Image (cartoon, rainbow, N blue to C red; front, side):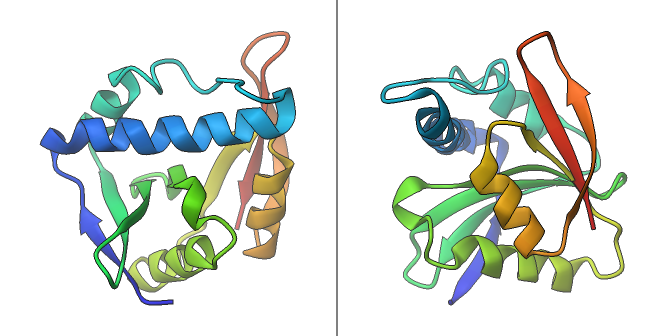
Length: 153
C-alpha cells in the first residue's frame, strides 16, 4: 500500500473536522445503530480540530495515498508517546491503510512505548490495535456511561 504523510496546516481544520466526524460517527453507528452520532466533545463542530492542531509537542498528519487522496488523519503526541487520534475515512476502511500508516509511524519514531485510548464500545478498534501488537492495560471512565480502554505497545 503506497501511503505517505502530509503535515496538517492550521488552516485545514475543516478537513480534519470532516474526517473526525466521519470516523467517529461510523464507529457510533456500528454500536448504537443507524444515524448515531457520537464522539468526543467538539469533534463535529471544529472545536476539537482547533484544539488538536494547536497542541504543543504534537505532530498532525493526513494519511495520503499515492494517488493523492486523503484517506485519514492521525495526531501523535511525541512527548508522551501517545497516539491521540487515528481516523480513517470510511471508504478506505479494511484496505490495509491503517496498518500501513501505523508501520510508517513506527519507522518514523522508532523505540517509543506507545499508548492509545479508544472507546470501550469500539470493538473494531480494539481488534485493530491488538493486531498491531498493543495490549489493553487499563480503563478510563469519563462519566457513568462513557468509558475508554487504554492500550500500550
